[in-house]
Length: 162
Image (cartoon, rainbow, N blue to C red; front, side, top):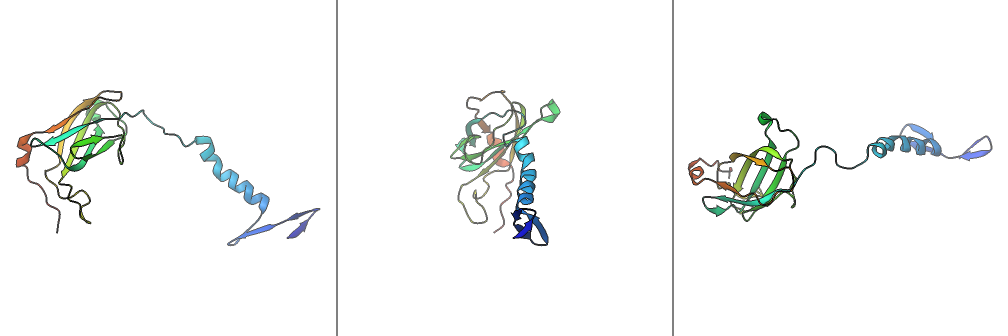
């Protein structure tokens, strides 16, 4: 403690920086001000939830991912959405999912067998990645089922290394 005028001032030492408790409090307030001003809420365009089923060769895909990317060639822009496929169903509102904006979207579907391994958390691929285009409504959509054509089964699947 040092005596400064009539009040006692406690000096705080942080590494090579010396400051009073009052100065440390002021610095903390100044550094937290941008977060308080900007807020912590979501920003950007409104996103919507999409769900449905995913089938390949007439069977539900056991495990995988559906990714929705705005089709910029058709004037659509915004954040990408995604959903995990489990037992042939996907929902952007479930774990690991992210809602998507509406409008023209490029859709990528990755399907796996679901037999998890340390080096393959979704299992082995059962198909080559499939890309398609859909036009999503600009609101929470009813089920949108994604069907991968049987002919896609002839595409070469890249196996994961042993």
